[in-house]
Length: 302
Length: 297
Image (cartoon, rainbow over the protein chains, first blue to last red):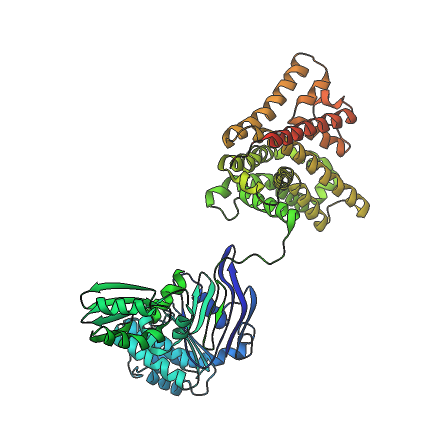
């Protein structure tokens, strides 16, 4: 549903996005990258707010910058506080519905506010809302015209954990409904909850795309780190080294060792056998760097 | 590290990638350096204070032209009976000498001294640029900026007067006047460019170079006047007046002579020879200086 083909964007001498190509389908995809990596510029191009300097962006098969009809099929939640402070949530979302040319803007606004769990009857200006409520108002205005593509730029920033969970649930629902939901975020442990598919941008270039666990599996230059807890970690470490399933072992304390391995599957199969052979009891075998944060750190740090 | 791919994921190589786009070669490098140098001296993409001096010089150069065009449009009838009320194109430079001297003293030192002082020259010479092409780019930049005040205002006057219907009669006169304006602007700019480049090639200190350019221009004029007018030396010694010489040549381009009666007695051929001689000498000084310059970083 979203396609970027060799997209570059520069502002004068500054290259914000450089030769980025990817495809995003239905469901939730996270766009990750450090500050200044080019995420917001990429999202702005996908939303049609700015054209690429070179390359092509396609949303639902059309050019979002030229095809104005496409704006009815895209919902954008910008990073900035883009709300009219003196309007109530209902008035603001109704305005968005009117601008989208909906027949029943009031009904659509009430439905959109319901989707984000906001009370349409709340009759006070948005300026008095909490950060989380304002964020949900922004999401509601993006959803009011029932778009097929929803683009959200840092929607979780500044929210408390409960508010984050609510929005993540919403993103998952939108993805399950068959929409294309692209979310940029810094909050990696939360991103992990709403989907495994990620696009990682670093220094304006695409570093990786796909399921982050599959990305981790592709990192053959980075040994996997596994924590093993046992009543005799020294014996287990010796056994693992003798079996040749680890490239390094670190004894953390008298109950714990951390093993580096290139082949996680083989290690998982061997560790119980090795422990039994050494007469040791196993308590825990836990991967330490298979989470999204580790994958992200390896990708942007290399 | 190359791109790694599986059914569900892709890791892209973000390491070094060779440039595969078009290479513009020496011409592109000269063009780029010229453009960058012009931007630098005009203060484009620089802080506000870097724009003040060039902005002021350009303002000074264009104000008389704007005033003259305004007068010629508002008082068309009066000027038709008294065409000498407004100065001609050849006399225009008398109103903008300050701007010309400021640019001559400021531009070349900014472009040449800074590069040697900061070591940028070494970086430039590591590119497709050679010493000759580097100097050509810098000379083009100085020439272009000086042309902004020597060529721009008369050209503006010609265009504005032509559009307002108070310009030359017919295409032939227009073409002749245009050629004279371009030639006159170039004559002033080329000598000032070669002089200021030669002075800038001798020192890495911008302030010293700027002061030296002003001193040479005004000093040579004063010495020439003292010798010819005060000590009754031959008028040919006016050829050492580096400030007045190009303006006298400009008068000849327009078929006139300047206000200096001593210079009026000199032949156009002698003035042109003196002009070409000085320009060649200054250019040779720059070229020799840079040919022998040891670039260590």
